Length: 151
Image (cartoon, rainbow, N blue to C red; front, top):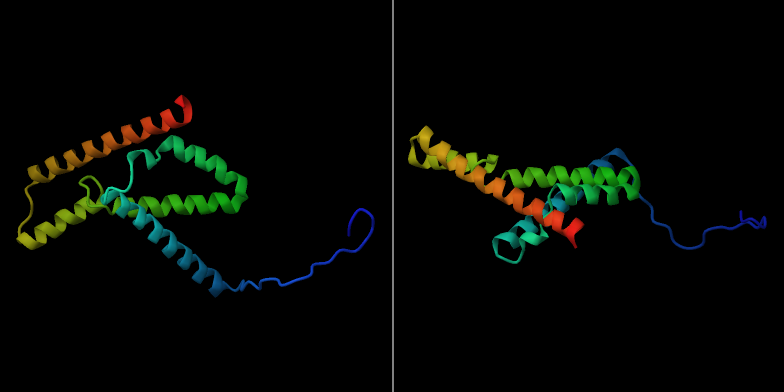
């Protein structure tokens, strides 16, 4: 009803949403698969040089995006948390020493060679990867600070 007391209805076509448990589970897997595909596409863009370091976001960008996600209510925050979780899972599998993907790559190398990589070699490789990740974190955080506070 409107303030004048007139009855107002909805005319037109409405979409029927299947709200069964199975549809929700399937929808969750579908959304995760689609989002994962977009994240992998973005990673591929980085590898092929179509992506800039300026396009990456660190802790400051995550904070800013979280405040935007809160405008979407609990659903917006939950979707953003799911995005962060999936993003972290995919990034962790990149074969960079210091990440799980780097360790997995070393395990594959050991399996191919039929002998383990020496502990010293593995330590040096992991430290180099860790130094690279720290440098990347510093650069991304600096980009965030300059993007949000200096411009």
